[in-house]
Image 1 (cartoon, rainbow, N blue to C red):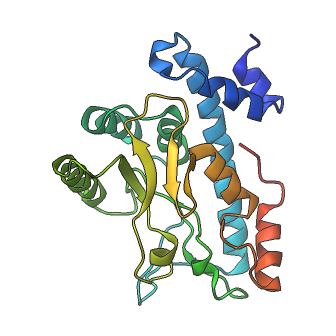
Image 2 (image 1 turned 90 degrees about the vertical axis):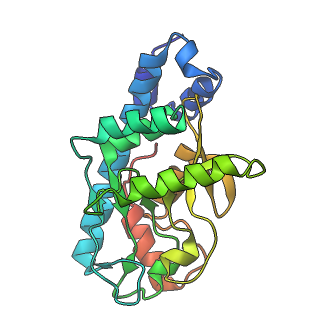
Length: 243
């Protein structure tokens, strides 16, 4: 079998992801390092996309803010801290196996928060802007880790709760400062290469969700919006790298 990383870089991404999915438990496959290399490449491409989207939104005068009444200014992209790899280890120890794509995102991309308001698209916060916060580095303390611990504990105590979803993002209503549903996140534990991302449209592979987000410039529910929104998202998505 040809080298996965080379084929991925050469554009055979869909087939490579299919073959990686067939590994099942990647830690028992004997090809962990090869698979991780593909996931790390994916994350480098994703980070480039995030940085370009943030640069373009900033140039537009986009106001990045919290999902609160005050619209408190927020940092849209926080690169991984020096503790990112240790955070992945903590998740593995506390919550079970973490899919390789989530590990790569945590160590290479960092935390992303694209909630805000565009000067020519006032409803942008309602179009499900991309949010993936694993380390919780926008917070000044360990509040996100405590939140995850509490969610994990409640899930363990509720035997009928189904799968555990590691919370990574508010749902699309909470992003728009409206009472909504459960947060988006990745199902854990998962010993496969790519994990399942639980969001508004059900469960989908994490990379598939990211590709959809980048195809719309970081706003995956912008379809059907007004002309200004379509113009903005089309320009944001221009030349972004497919994962």
